[in-house]
Image (tube, rainbow, N blue to C red; front, side, top):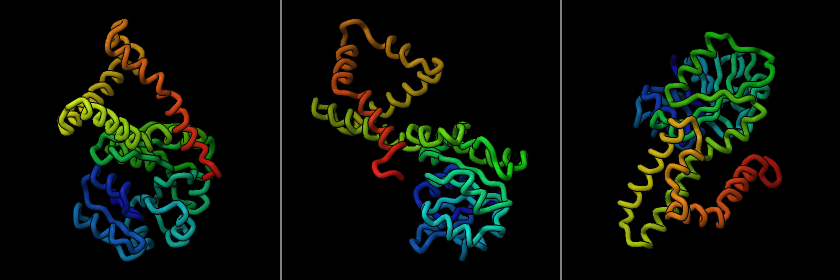
Length: 257
């Protein structure tokens, strides 16, 4: 399947790295498409329309506000369209690209290492249901990038507030732990290695135990021990409330989207 990327920013680059094969790509004059081609191969195409004519699947990676202009360029030409644009639902895509099959997905940046999460928004109803074979091809393609999770489209914002922005949250938590360890005398590189490896192993352990986070905590926490004291400090500092505020800020931003 020949992939065409309209927009060649961070997410496009992460997906292209994960796929590991040459892609067609465009940009709006930033030079990012040529940089992507220089790194991974493929071709910077002169126009979005030419890209749509040549690609089996067009992946929309541009800014959401550019949807109308892009639709005017490739509508009626694109064979199939996958969108990774925030705030753009399936109905809006169908209105722009009918009768081409459209797919609304939301990957996160670990797709670069094929360890990402890709949310596939499933609408309650479609104006133009995609051919099952095409849908299977698209999901197989994105499945190469990590774990594909199907979510009702009405819950896409909440799911994205966990997985889409999650890498930034985990990076912040890692920084905070490293900073605290450095203040106690650990070398920053060593502290970073300890934190990163512990986060990775803990995630694998939570998954292996059927996502029973309480069981994982209990296995580490002895009554009155050091882990118990650390957890108590985190609870007192409001860690749960902080994440509640974070998801609220993502799903319901002040002033709307």
